[in-house]
Image 1 (tube, rainbow, N blue to C red):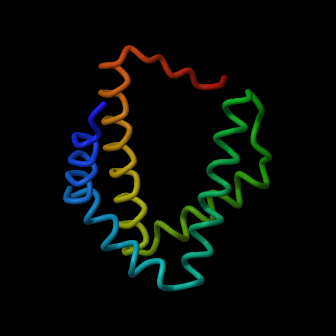
Image 2: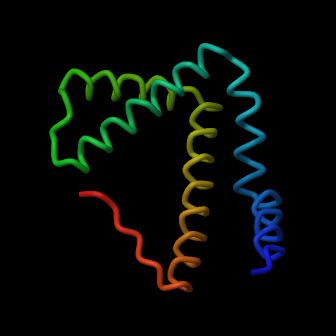
Amino acid sequence: MEYSTAYRLADEIRRSEEYTTYHGLKDSVMADETVAALIREYRRMQTAMQMSMLSGSQADPEEMQRFNTLTALLFGKPEVSQFLLAEIRLQQTLADIMKIITEATGLEIQLPG
């Protein structure tokens, strides 16, 4: 198999608006160690809650309250909010690309739950 097409796709992704916006914001947002630590905690909590939902469990109410408070704090800062939204847009773009590729191959990806 020739991988040149995959490398061209990677290059196209790096030149995309979603990628350049995300990385432009990432550098400035993550330069603040406090904000970077809060974002890491936000992601950790978000993943834990998603895994809990996939397994059919209920999230701990206190943990859910902490997550909501942290979410409000992070999204209350305009630059951080722009960064997190840019990250979501980039993730969606990559998910769309993955869907196109898996549909083309007939590969079925099963998610737990």
